[in-house]
Image (cartoon, rainbow, N blue to C red):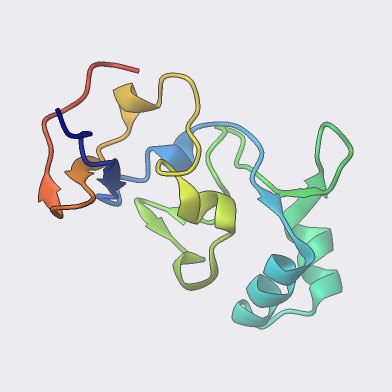
Length: 122
C-alpha cells in the first residue's frame, strides 16, 4: 500500500493562534524587519514591543492583558507582511497542545493540493 500523501494545513486567518497566550520569539533579523515596517527605530521597537523570554534566551513580542498578541486587531495581524517565522510556521511546523480545538486551518493533502479528511483530534 503506498504511503499516504503528507497533510499540510491551509490557514483560514481565524487568528485563534494569535489569541493563545505564550511567547512569540523574535530574531534580530525579524526585529529589524518589524521595526522598519512600523517605521520605528529598532531601539524604540525593542523598548515598546518586546520582553525577555522566560528562559532568558532571546526576546518575545508582548501580549495584551488577555494573552493575545498585541499586534492583533480583530482577526487581522498588523505584522502580516513581516510576521515572525514562529507565526508563519503554525500549524505546519509546530503546534501547541489543544491547537486542533481552536484552529480553523483546513487539512490539505500536499501531493494533490486537495482538501483532506479531518484527522482525529490531536
